[in-house]
Amino acid sequence: MSGIEAADKDMTMDADQAEVARVEQREPRVLVEVQDLKVHFPVTRGVVFKRHVGDIKAVDGVSFTINRGETLGLVGESGSGKTTTGQAILQIVPPTSGRVLFEGNDITSLKGRAQRDMRRDMQMIFQDPFSSLNPRMKIGNIVGEPLVVHGLVKNRAEYDDKVDELLTMVGLAPAMADRYAHEFSGGQRQRIGIARALALKPRFIVCDEPVSALDVSIQAQIINLIEDLQDEFGLTYLFIAHDLSVVRHISTRIAVMYLGKIVELADRVSIYRTPRHPYTRALLSAVPIPNPRAERQRDHSNVKGEIPSPLNPPTGCHFHPRCPDAMPICREQAPEFRAIEVGHYTSCHLYD
Ligand code: SF4
Image (cartoon, rainbow, N blue to C red):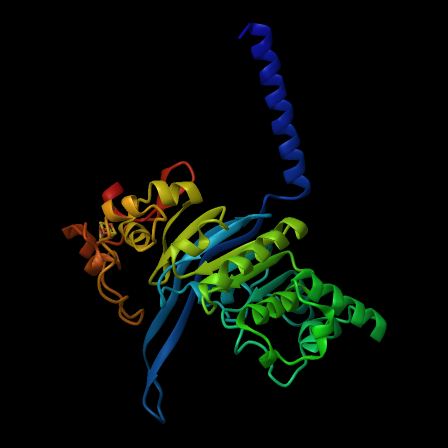
C-alpha cells in the first residue's frame, strides 16, 4: 500500500469513527445498563417475633450492559438467579441495591406515572404460556388491554384495528380474537403473549425462557418469530434460557450466571468456541452436536450435583464444590470478574 493510499485509509477510518461518535452522541449504543444489582430476600423464623436469620441472595452484584438492537443471552440452571435478574431490571421485583439505567436514566427510583411510562418501553415475554394468560378473557382483550390501560386508542374501531394488526404480526388470524386461551396450542399461546408484549411498542423486551415449556418442534418457530420481530422493529432483548443450545442462534453476546453472579460474559462465538469458565464448559458439554462423530468424541463432563442453596452459598468461588478444576485457593477466595481478552470476561482463579 502506498503512503497516499495508507493516508486515505486513515482519513476514511477517522471519518467513520467520527460518524460513529456523532451517532453515539445522538443515540448512545448502550440501551440498558445494570450496575451492581442485588436482590436479596430476607429469611425469618418465628411466628410472632420474626427473627431475621439470613438472606437468599438470588442476585448478588450483577453488572452488564445491553446494546441497542442486540440480544444478550442470560443462561444458567434453575436457581441461578436469571429470572430474578430480568424481573429486577423491569422493576417487577424491587432490587435490594444497585441501579438499572435505561438510556442513561436510573429507573430504579421511578414511581407512579414515571414508572408507568417506563413500562411502555420495557416489556416481558413470560415462560409459561399456559398460566400467563387469563383464561376468562378473550385473546383479543388480552392483547388489547395494555392499549386501553395506557390510553393509546381513541375509540373501538381503532382498538379493533390495533388488535388485528398485533395478531397478524405474530402469525395469528384476526378472526381468532374472540376465542379463549384454552382453545389454543402452546405455541399459539406464546404468540398471544408476544402480541401482548408488543402492544405498547416497547424498545426492550425480557424474554424469560419463552420456549422452554414448548415442544421442540415449536421452539424454532417461536425463536424465528422473536428474531423477525427484532429485525422489523429494532428491538433489544435480554433472552433468558437454562441451556446454551436455545440461545446459540439468537444471541449477540451471552452471559452465564451461577448462584446469583455472572461468571462469564462474551460474544456468542467466543462462548461456544473458547469457553473459559469451568461452569460454562460443563453447560456446553450438555449441548448436543448435530454431527454424530463429533458428538461421540467430545467431552461429556456435565456439571455434577445440584446447585447449592443461595441461602448458604459455598465459601470462596461458589462453584468450587462442583468444579473439576478446583484448587485450594478456590475454597478461600472469591475470584474477581474481569476481562481476560477484549470483550471476554470471567471470574475464575485459573486466569489469575
Ligand atoms: Fe473452578 Fe476455582 Fe475457577 Fe471456581 S475459581 S471455577 S472453583 S477453578
